[in-house]
Amino acid sequence: MTTLCRLLGIHNNLIHRITHLDGQNREQKLTLNQDHKNEEKKKKRKIAQRNSLDVDVELALGFASHYSKIGTMECLVEEGNAMSFLGPLMRAAERGCMQVVEWFVKRGCRDMELCLALTAATSSSQVAVAAYLLPHVPKHVLAALSIEILKAAGERSSGSLDGVAFLLHSDFLGDPVATYAVADSIAKSDDDAVAPGLRSFLREHWSEAAFSDGLQQGKEHYLNFVRIVNCGESPICLKDLPGPLRVAIAYLPLYRESVKVGGCCLLSQRLRGQLVEAAKRLGGVVLEEANQGKELVAVLEHHLPPFLLNASSAAY
Image (cartoon, rainbow, N blue to C red; front, side, top):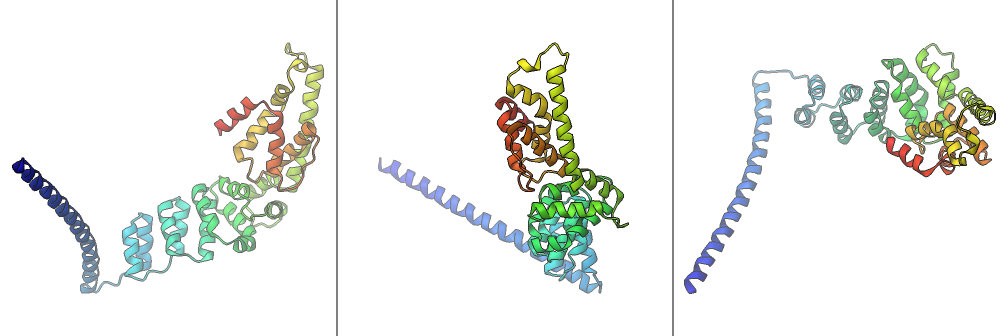
C-alpha cells in the first residue's frame, strides 16, 4: 500500500510539472510571436532607412486599406504617423468593406469624415455600412447637411437608390417631420444639381404630393372593394365570409408591404397615405401625424386574422 501511494504521489507530481511547463511554453510562444511581429516592424523601418526610401505613408495607407491589410494599416498609423483617413475611409464605405470601416471608426474619425463616409455608403447602396455609420454621425451634422447628403447620394448612385431609401426609412434626422420635409424639399426643387432619378423617386414616394396620392389610392381601393362585395359575380359570395377574411382580401397586400419596410420605421409618404385611409375605413380613426406609422399598422393588425399576421411576419 505504501509503495502504491508513493507511485500515485510521483504520478501526480509529474502531471503537475507537465501542466506547469505546458503553461510556461504557451506564454513563451505568445511572447515570441509578439516579439517576432515587433522585429518585423523594426526590420521594415531599418530597410527603408538603409535604402533612403521616402515612403508616402498616406498613399501606403490607401493601398493597405484597399486590400484590408489591417496589420499594415496599424503600422502606418502608429509608426509612420499616417493621419489622412478620409480617402481610404470613403473608398472602403463605397465598397462595403465593413472590416476597414470599423477599424477607421474605432481609431477615431472627425465628424465630417464620418458624414462623407455615410454619403459614400448611401450612394453605392451599401446599406449595412450605412447602418453602422449612421449612429456615429452627430445629429446636428446630419441636420445641417441633410439635403446635401441626399443630393450627393443621388448624384453618385449607379442607378439604385436603396441607400437613400434606407436613410429615409431609418428617419435619419431623428424627427419624422424633419425627414419628410427634407425629402419633400428636394422633390420640389428645380435645382439642376439634383439627379433626375432622385427627384422622381422622392416625388413618387416621399413628397407631400405622394401622401395625397396615397390617400386617393386608398379611397379608390375601398370603393372598388365595396363594389365587388355588393355587385360582384364571383361564385364565392364575399358577403358571407367572416369579417376578418374580407379585410384580409382587401388589405393583406398593403399590410405585407408595410411589414416589409418595417412597421416601426418611417413609412414612405405614399404608403402612409394608403394606411391612413385604411385605418379610417376599418377603425374609424384618423391618424395623420407623421410619427404614427406604428399605430397605423396596428389598426390593420387588429382587423386581420392572427394566422395571417404570423405568416406575414415570418416571410419578412
